Length: 422
Ligand code: SAH
Ligand code: SF4
Image (cartoon, rainbow, N blue to C red; front, side, top):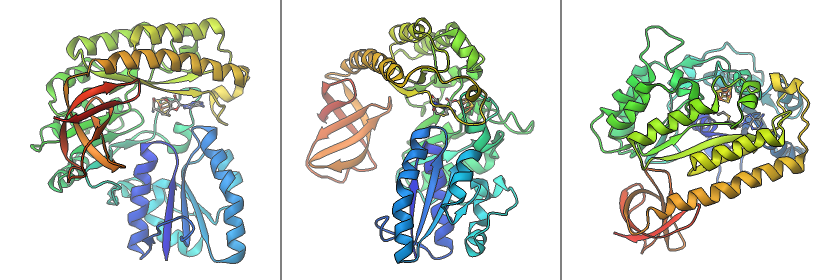
C-alpha cells in the first residue's frame, strides 16, 4: 500500500507530515512517487488562511471520481478550524487531530477519530526527515496569544512545551548524522517553557543547542515582538551558531490596528527592538509578516505600515491579505476592505520591499558568503546564506549538496543573489 502526503501551510505542517510518514511506514505503507499512484492520501491542512482550504476543496472532486473506480482512502489532519472540519468530515474518510497521530494506525483500521488527546506521544514519533541535512525540530505547539485574526489557538490548542531533554536528544541525533541546519519551531518560541515551571527558558534552550560541538547553523521561528527579551537579543551575539537572520512579525505599523489585532505592543516598541538587534549585528537580515486589509483598516492606518516599511527597510516580508477565520474575534468585525484595495495595499508594500531588499542585497556584491547548498538544477547550484538569502551559483555538478560552500557574489536582485565558487 502506498501513501502520499500533501502538506499545506507552514513549517509546522511540514514537520507534521514528517511524523505522519513515519507512522504510516510503521504499518507497512511506502511512499508513492505521485499522488495518482497512492492508495492513501493524507492532507495536512491549514485553516490559517482561506487560500489553503480553497485548494483542498478544488481537489476533492477528483479524488471522489477516483473513488468510484478504485480503492482510495483520504485522510485530513493538520490545522483545521471547526467550520472546515464540518465540511471536510463529509468528504474525507477520516479527519483526525494531529496530536493523536500515534493512534493513526488504529483510527485507519476502524475509520473513527475517537482518540485520547496525547500531545506527548506526538513528539515522541521520530520524523521521516524530508532532507538529509536540514531539519525542523518542533519545540512546542499551540499558542496562547489569541491575536484577533488568527486560527492557530483554535486549531493547535494552548501552548505545550516539549521537554528540552527530548529536543536536545533529537538535535544530537541529527548532528551525529551530519545535519547542517537545525530550525527550532514554535508559533511563539519566546514563550517556550512558560507552561511548565520546571522547564528552561527559550534563551537557555538556544544556548544548550548552540553548545553542541558540531559545525552547524541554528535558526528559529517564530518570535513574538511582545516577548522578545533583551536576554534573547544578547543570544544573537553570544550564540555562535545562530545565523544572521531574524524573522519578527509586525503585522501592522498602525498602533490602532495592532490594538484591534490584540498584539500587545506598539510600533515604537517593535522599532526599538529592531534597533537593538541591529546595534549588535548591523548585517542581520530582517523579515516580517504583515496583514493588509484588516477589518476597518483605513488608508491612513495603512500608511503607518507604509512608513514602517520605509523605516525598517526589510530584507523580506510575507504579506497576506486579511481573510476572516470563523470563531476568531476579528471574524465578528465586518471584512470591509474591498479585495482590490487589499491587493493594492499588498502591492504598495511589495514595491517598497523590492527597493529595500535590493539595497540590502547589493551589500553582498564582491563579497564572499557561505551557503548551505540544497539543490542542483539545470547547471545551477542553489542554497541559502546564513542570512537566508537565496543564492544561485553556476558550477559543474559536484558533490556539494548538503555542504557549506563559499561563494563570491557577482550579481544581486531584490529576491536573490548570484555568484561563483570562491
Ligand atoms: N505564530 C506566528 C505566525 C502564525 S500564522 C506569529 O505569531 O507571527 C502566519 C501568518 O499568517 C501570520 O503572521 C499572519 O501574518 C498570517 N495570518 C494569520 N491569520 C491570518 C488571517 N486571518 N488573514 C490573513 N493573514 C493571516
Ligand atoms: Fe496566531 Fe498570534 Fe499565536 Fe502567532 S502569536 S500563532 S499570529 S495567535
